[in-house]
Length: 579
Image (cartoon, rainbow, N blue to C red):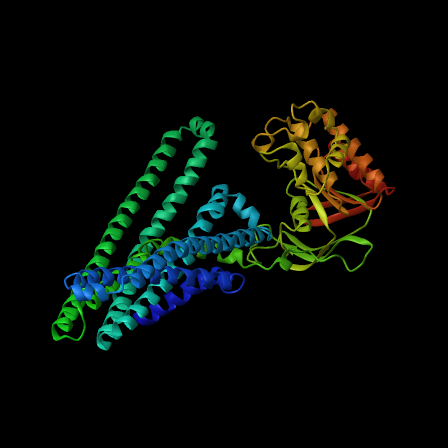
């Protein structure tokens, strides 16, 4: 039962690391093998350097005791070999660091790309935005934890195994059973200690990882929510939680440091036992006349250096737990194919949106609860201006999120042309005005940026800034008023040359004068392109007046769909807020 459980555990571990190992095995296979090979050569050159140096020093000392031997002894070839190995080892060490780190950074870069693709999947962003500290942790610590897979586990393990085999082969020329015994001892003790350390450190490393995540999340909550915590009398409690997380990290660090010390001692004891055994063996062989003293020195120094690559596994063993946890967390996101993220265009070229018998639940419960949108069908032709109305909770935002691809349908068909969306919340970044606009079109030049700013009514404001387009905004667009931030978001929408615009309450939160100006400029932009389609979720009459068709929703169902000129159209328009 225990064997089966252990086997299942190893299988589960390999499955968790599959996505990471796949990148090394496919896209970076040659580079990964090159790095591992150079690392193995570095270890072998170090062993050869120390072994040859020991042999040379011993042989020179013995030759110096006899004049005839001193004149006959060739000092040039061994010394040249030592210089060559010394320079070669230095160059190989540099090449090893260069290739292995470049490989690791390349793989981590690919992982970040795949992680972003995973977040682009429906529902993923919603779930992660509920816990923003988790996003930061996934992008930094979780990804960085995976560098141990190659740098501290795969490469040192291969180098250690090569060192063990080569040492055994070299000693087999002295005594075959000695070479076999040394190889077996190195593999069993060296890898065995690493496995035991990894097993014992796994739980501790995971606890430290969770505590570190809690510390970061609580720190963010403390900094961003000081006012609310103070008003509710929870500031001291939040500080206590922060101290508790820090104490758990310190406790885990102490346990890991203790385990590292024990593993170091275990490697020292294993190496000393092997060295003592080798010393006794070669001493007996020297006494029997089977080998000479310089060869005995060579054997001892080879055995001494053969344990060093195994000691390099200690750090990877200690980090094995957090590496597995990071791989488990990211596995579902880093293996998503890109073509799943693309919405198919409608089969009818006259349609911009084509929804047929769609069922949607915002929390992606996969049918466990009653779907919020049931058997919903909606077709919008290219060039139509449609207002989506209904009371709060009617399903407007859910429908907009479905069309935008932020939600996936439980059932039914969804086909949408390329589109852009203006959310209720204005998303601006701590960057320049120019770079905030270039998110919509990275290839836009400055004249085009000034043109869309003018259409959005923000050109004069930006021109008055000290650095114009290069003026930096604070976090969340700090430095702009709510109306100016909304205009900048609208300019970003105008910059997107796509056939469909999705606007979710575009003037919400703006004063009447600013809202009227934004809508006037939006109407002017629409007049310049009659083929552009608009779907606008709204509660206010001034926004719905831009539409030539009104769709009314109630409890996730479309209850009215009328066009301008129908008496019901004016009645629905009159039912909206006039402000």
